[in-house]
Image (tube, rainbow, N blue to C red; front, side):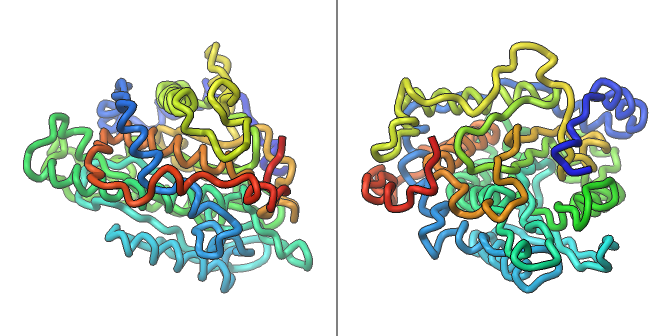
Length: 411
């Protein structure tokens, strides 16, 4: 059974099982109460939009972009997979993030495969972390031409967005850390939550999607973190609690199947409905401000753009889930926000999931939404960006540039 058929409708039962099975996670739950994320001022949003080109590193026609470096066949245990992994690692190390590899050998239906998750943490000494994640492998196919599968939406584009987000927010995270060290942060609990990026290997099934032939990297990392205990942090609220690596996770946000035009995103989990709403709010304020406007493409103009998010009008919108890298963490009590296009892009698991499947205004829009959303979650201060290295004119593309790659735009 493939992943598209694994939309399940047993969320209430899952919650009951989790509550009964994981009482040891009560400390974690007690620190994760819903909170109102402060809205950035209009000037701060403008700074996030204009200080750094929101499309340069997501443009597949730019050979130096993050997306171009990732958009190659990269099935697990291949040279290309290692090339992409090394690129992600070097990019984040250049930002002075703490990067580690979770290396392991997995038993698959086609033999033993070496894999490695990438875990990049801005502040490894922080007591808590919010995880933004995606898988960086592409689906394995045994024969040509299917083995040239690129997986642009699945999930080269989400990985490129994550790298650009790290570069965009890095100076703000540095400034916040300075204030925290100098006891100048008003809310030290929030300020002691760091951003962690996880790039999963081995998400795709080698033959058919099953519980044992899928999400190899996520299953390995969740089990490792659930059984790895860490020493108490200075600012941890309960000093006498022995904490696992998993216990320090506030939320895991998983990106998948993003970059195609007109996606539909829904809320899957009641406990993160407020986070879903916060992302919807970030999108609305950006759209109403005109930040989505892109060249002569009218679909993103104020008053014309349509939300990526399905309205959350009833609790029924929060039931069911799609099989993906979040499941081993969900099963261990981690709070999940799953950002995945549903229905899947029509190019899913075909050779057409290449650069032509991506929509440039959509990629740029996702980048801006995440900049604002993560800045508000972490209570960053965009005014800390004292100068703007790139003006808003650098993110505008002329009509000729847009029509030179018409296959990237769908109406």
